[in-house]
Length: 82
Image (cartoon, rainbow, N blue to C red; front, top):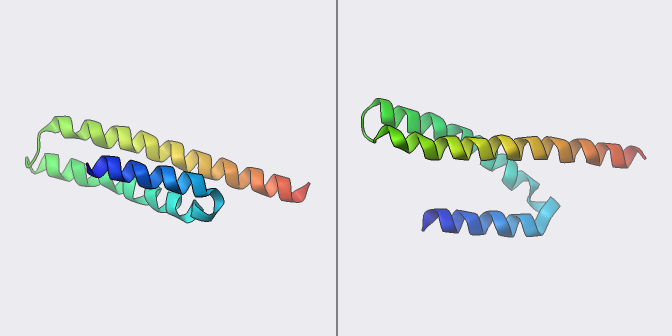
């Protein structure tokens, strides 16, 4: 349920677009942190190691988001200079 709700937030933020740019930056920070927390939970033997799979998938999404944010910033700078 939580993942569905988060998905809803991302979709709505994407529809709004440029005004929600900060939101996407915040998600990059927290998604990188999630992998660290999941790793700690696994190392403390509070969860099975398969849980890291979710963190790795989310990490891939964070990297993708970060890449797109940087590319869009670069493209905005290029378009303003034109």
